[in-house]
Image 1 (cartoon, rainbow, N blue to C red):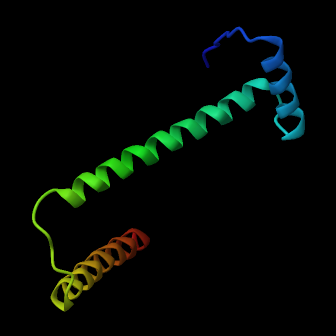
Image 2 (image 1 turned 90 degrees about the vertical axis):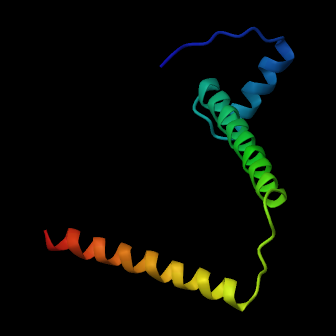
Amino acid sequence: MTTVTISLPDSLKDFIQREVQSKGYGNVSEYVRGLLREAQKKEEAVRLEALLLEGLTSGSETPLNREFWGEVKREAAQILARKKRVSRQRRAR
C-alpha cells in the first residue's frame, strides 16, 4: 500500500477527527479511503449514464412491440439454458 501525505488546515483536521469518531472509522486512513470509494462510485455512475444516453441517441429506434419482447424472452431462455447446462457439467465432474 502506498502512503500519501496531505496538509490540512486545523479546521479540516478537526472535522475529519470528528467524522472518524462519530462514524465508527478506525482511523483517518479508513475515512479517506471511504470518501475516495464514494467518489469512484459517483464517477462510474456518471460514466454509465453518459454511455446509456449515448446508446439512446444513437442508431435507429427499436419498436417495443410483442415481437421485440418475444425475442428478448427467447434470448433470455437460451442464456439461462446454457448457464444451467454449464452448471450441470461442472457438478458432474
